[in-house]
Length: 177
Figure 1 (cartoon, rainbow, N blue to C red):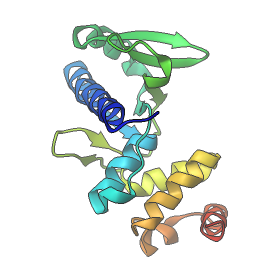
Figure 2: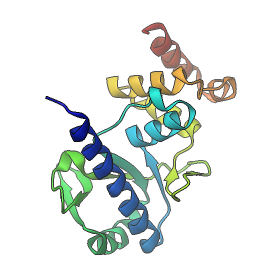
Figure 3: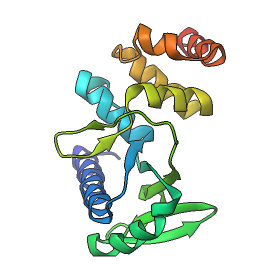
């Protein structure tokens, strides 16, 4: 049975990992953007905390050339670098489950300027997230689009900047609600 305590522990662990991740990437001197469910959560939470859905892991976009610097810096912050099933990971040594790991994704080359949280974490801007989510278009990506759209983060300007194919996908997501 899920209790408030279990939920709170998950939230604390996730944000502890995010804080340490930010310190790893800063120490390594690398450019990055938090993407995926955590970025969607933080953007949505900023508009309406009750609409934000928590995620189980953290995805971060990096440049492939920075991977060795990240792996080296990670150990000092309680992470272990692993490459498993074709994915680069930072696993929290205090909670060594790959599902709660940080997934290091190859940097999308045309990222816009990041959005910086109060804590200094660099997030992919909403426009970049929308483009990524509509390109991948898995079920979880469609749910993330619904979450962003539910708090009106997908503005007419963002919608107008999408290709015809991605606008069609956005329409599909909106029609499925």
